Length: 226
Image 1 (tube, rainbow, N blue to C red):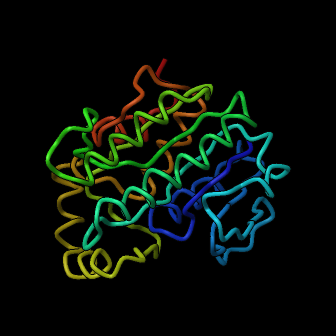
Image 2: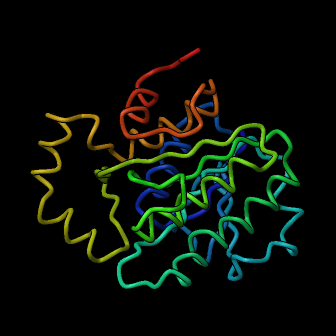
């Protein structure tokens, strides 16, 4: 399988990349982003790209992929709706529309968030914008599209969040998050489980397009769901 990853330097992207490189069925991983991961691996090819709204000059490098894991995202803290929409919706739309046109058989997996508002009418801004983004993706001509809605994500294997607030949270509450994962396994998803669930989804498919935390946990543990 050939996998394309966006957002590889973030906490989720780091975890997904790690699982892809460990998976024997993944033959090639290509990343697109403003920065590279810093990892050297024979399966890995990385492309630095500064304008995340325009991929016209990259199209020769964006076809022939089996799946895209779109892990690019930011916290809405301190951001107005217009700016958050540009980063969350507009950038995703630009990439996804290009990929759908170039890869008729691609499976697209988007990392959303727990509480996303599919109606796009709720009072909380980030939930509306995420819902709008999910709805747009589900209308595109991919072979399949899956929206992952994790809640609390526990980083493993030295992975850290670039967001200072999240990084501080994980540092201060690491024992509590670990305990929650043990006591309430559906409430906390590790970066390893998230990556494994994404890979299993593209291998075996699912009858659900929107996957909440409990679904992600379920698919991370199963080898065949159909």
